[in-house]
Image (tube, rainbow, N blue to C red):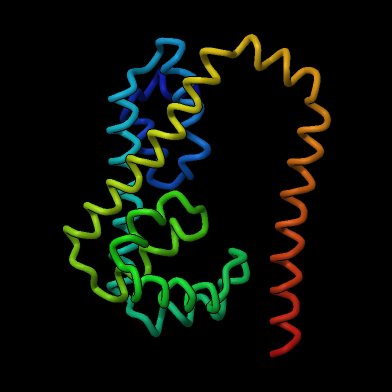
Length: 196
């Protein structure tokens, strides 16, 4: 990403944030801020703009196609994304109860982050309010991730030494956590397929 940001700068960060999870971009951008390669404010603005554009696209797509077609997609193809129509139903119910708060705080929750734009579009949440709460929620979460990346950058030497000691254990634990999550999701999808 260093080469990417060097070539495209803040516009490159905004472009990547349209489709990428902030957990993949912001910590490394924070590392680059700590090194002096990027500016905190520039990264924040680029990250918020890019993510809000991406979420706005999902909002407009859901609003344009309507609830029936969105449900049909989740019923037919959601399992490919490890997301089910039941996940959509839960998100719709949550949105109906806590509309503004879900859009605001949902930006920090990985699955909810992408899904919450769908009910906002389906339920025709006013666009200005949707963009405002999306941008605020994204800014809060991005700032936290960016700051964490800056702390890593400032303490890189100590962190490398610590990770060198525990690297194998950490990698095994991360691998097991990812495998357990994927196994559970795949098992649930297989059970749903078999019950049809």
